[in-house]
Length: 288
Image 1 (cartoon, helix red, strand yellow):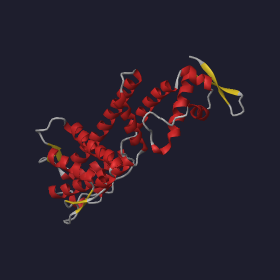
Image 2 (tube, one colour):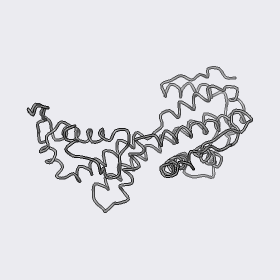
Image 3 (cartoon, one colour):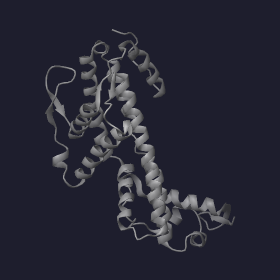
Image 4 (cartoon, one colour):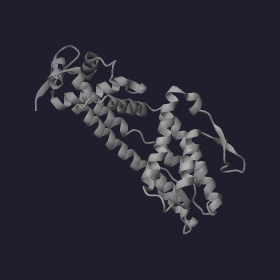
């Protein structure tokens, strides 16, 4: 492997670096330069000399690894696809659901009470998920990187980006499927027998509603950011629902049914276990 020398600010060579270390510094510096605004398609504002300076490497060593800016951008697209696809998950969703369900042990014992809880969880979590998505630099970057595939001319760099995005999407869907399975099973609901695809399809449809509305928000927020009166949840009064939550509730109503064999006494222990997995502790300690 080739060995290069980094340059200190006074121009004196001081640090021995391999080509891989130079590569890593350049990619890290390029992604850091984007800031919180997210990537833009093709990185039109990317200045190689600025990235090289930020990385603290020599210009000659960079152009021995990448012979042109276009080659560097190809690798940068793939790096962005890998990093940002792993940052899409909403880590707060499960914690929010656990806290909500734990706060109302009086609703655990009846099917009607558990339906109220899961509706409220959908209403709160999906609203939260929509707004965390549109505010997420990772999602904006993932979207911009995905858009690069629209101009696919068959080159190898874009094929690598497509595969990286697919792998990241698979991981994201698996995480969402696991979350929704844990939530619905916790409250005594199961998938209908006449639907194939399982929780993977359930998660794909749900996340597509959120992401589709997030894309629509970019051009027409007036139609995505309204709230609508919907079914009651924790009280008998109708309450306001975000469009993302309304869409997901429709999927829930179509896919899920009460499990006739469910034992409500398992809820508290399951909440405790889920609380430990999220680094917290459930507030529910006694069954009603």
